Image (cartoon, rainbow, N blue to C red; front, top):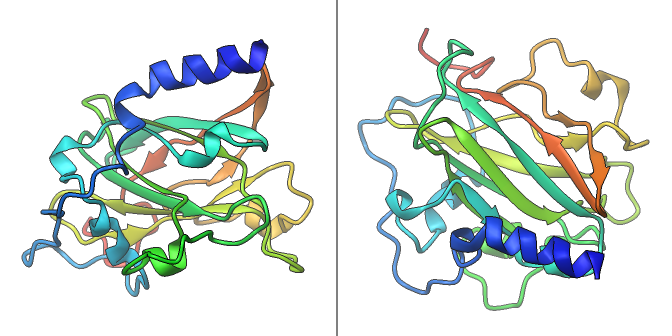
Length: 220
């Protein structure tokens, strides 16, 4: 009964976000030619434009399809700030993807573009006027037969600048997470180490993001 309540609440909170990856319409998203190039090399960052829903129609909340399947349920939320670390950044696009419970990026076999490598466990969010974002998913697994810590890949797109990587979302309680990863002196976008709190069977974590922090080529 408790699990059913949790799922109901999650769907209500993310109601408008549950269908963000369901549309089959052609996307109008594209990289503006006049954007300032930042972040250096960014393999796969163009995947951020593969969402069939136009950026201006995205929500600040997204729920991935794995949230309603067996596994450790995870809710991540936070504020994205401008480079001054004070002003909330509205209308920032956050693209993220991760492995499933077996440690692979799952595909159906019909994927196109970067979905062939990123899999279908990926989502798109646009921050609200307060810079807020939230997503529902499961804690990903580490790659099979590896010592890589479990992680969630994030890519950011803000107005006027090209899309760029920030530090991955990783987990403070992960025994595979190296000490140097926990204590990076110059984390890109701010620390990505999540400290989860268990409540009603769901793990909650916060991560605030600072645009341009330690991003190469970012204008001062």
